[in-house]
Image (tube, rainbow over all chains, first blue to last red; front, side):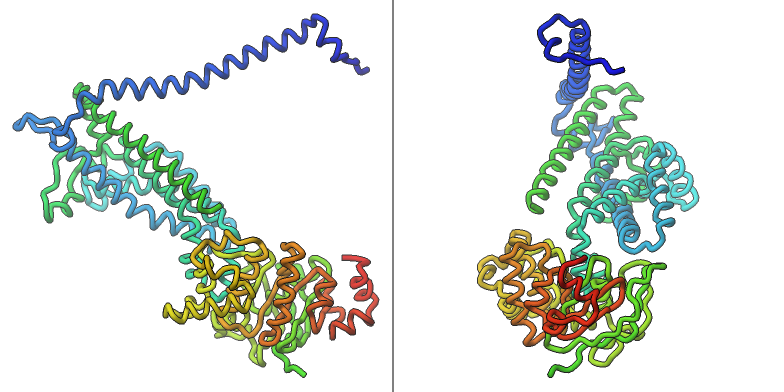
Length: 300
Length: 252
């Protein structure tokens, strides 16, 4: 038996069912609104708090000197240099491999099973806690390969960690390239590699660069995987050959230094570094947004 | 009387277990337009792609029989794919200009084949665009992205791109099915000019188009060539009832 509902009547008459629904709707709306507001509030709160505590610490010597009891300076110059080293070395190790793997998976791999296995492996890699990467890096690169506590050990460890990110974003970018480009180039007599080099990779470049920027963000923010691999050196490299030797020396990034400062209850320094890190994250996000918008406009 | 440019003998093609082309034996005349007609999935596009080995890219494809270009088997071992596709160019159903400038699109083929001289590339670009009847529309915007052209212009650009490597044969896979009637007409006019110096093979779903542009026509059904011959004869009095029915629009 179906009950006939008279909607027009319920609009005029006082209907408890409808009132009930209206109240539920209002409550849900308020809750969702508060949840969204809460997220924004927390973010804004953290940023304001860190900036308020951190900015007073930031002066020129903070950026240009290293911490020294003898000179009486507190500075993060060495850590900033280390961060640049780690970022550059990690990218050098991970980008060619990651992009290469994605090209192979997308353009060459003949067996679906192999592709699925590798994709499963990369997805799993993404889920591994970074401290596990740190342990592996310390044992394998540090001890087995004898690289010790060094920037190189840290960078190689991180390269494993961001490999899936690079591969994933490159694969997605390659998948978005229309097949017509491939057929067109091959039909012109291009070899596969020529086609990949001249058509596919340039078309996929925005996606690849986005992946790289995300990876840089992760490298800059990483601490657990670096603590036991790159160590915590904070000195500036000697100019000259020291710039090369530096990669074999221990070097803590900004996050590592922040961790150490907090462990020593040097909260001013920690907040200073936090403010610098937050600025970097904001800058990265802004850069990403700008680039994405620009590329979208070009491709249209 | 034109000579024979391409001849296929007993050409069979399998996608895995699917027998897509069944013993196709056909001669394609030089400097003429040959149309391949037939309902969707009849194998005409597959046949077209077999003529410059574009099927090689597809997984699980197996081919038996022969395809001879000027008497030479293109499936023989040691055939250079780059050289083959230079001689046998291709235009696709969807206009597929590369995401680069109009100039670079046209120069893409010549550059594959090692052309570096700026002056010669300039000349090739102009000549190819003129031949594809799109020079006037593009000469002032050669450095602009090809994506800014209309669909019909893009397709003529793709024809120009294919012509830039001086092919002998032009394969066209439903080149006008994604275009409006005016653009279609332009491409058809272009085809009639091109056949003076190129051998053209065109797959089309459009009977009128085949009748307008093709000297020869072959009717495909379920992977077989049912009937082939001069377009006029096929359209005025096909011998096979299936050909007559298809041309009359009774199926497909």
